[in-house]
Length: 305
Ligand code: GDP
Image (cartoon, rainbow, N blue to C red; front, side, top):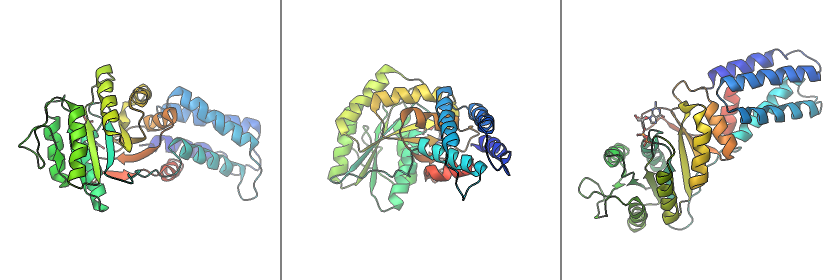
């Protein structure tokens, strides 16, 4: 991802090499190229406008630096702006001071939430945590089983509403995700798990019923983090989806999934920019290890490499 954006920007900046001083026309030409490259990478129009506006303003107002030539200065500005959009400093999970850290996953069906639950729990386990997964997606027939399979692969227990097939079982009223979520957090407390990851139901599109359910779960379990999982391939739709989820559940961080595909990267930049929320993790494949902490500075450097 970002390969073509990266190539385009690098080519643009190459044209500035060797220039002693940048005229306003040089800056404008460069900003125009940046705008085209971002639009072609599927970054949302308002985000592109804001981004290029800031770059232009800073580039024109930049103090002459002895250490950097003007071309390098623009690269530095673009780099800083990209880092800023993607969330600034690497944002780690906020752990609860008392009791288990509760992490809720939200996003459309197929975004990659259940897969992420497995990846995140394996990753946390490797760091010495003792996570438990809670299956609150009671809408999709196979969702609970899918989470159980993921839990088995990650070697992490799954709390689910159907007794029998789970490693930690209980008699919960099947069909009430809010009750299951609450009971799952209680189970974690009792069994001394220090992290609870709550998988929730998604629909194919934003839906008022689904959002209300997610909101109720959020209210019931008071999560330390609400991670919004978004398929990086969805392009321009990403902005509306992200804004609807942000309004619905006020998420605390973004997880970009399917970064291994040929997404052009626009969704990532747009979602982070319009919500002002940090990108926290990247999912890069179907395997449990295809997952990493997201570093905005490294991603920006990769784009401008
Ligand atoms: P959910 O409906 O949000 O729980 O989504 P799932 O976790 O079931 O994922 C939907 C599909 O996307 C599954 O076939 C996953 O194997 C696949 N998937 C999830 N994350 C990734 C990823 O990072 N890369 C790729 N290539 N596929 C993924």
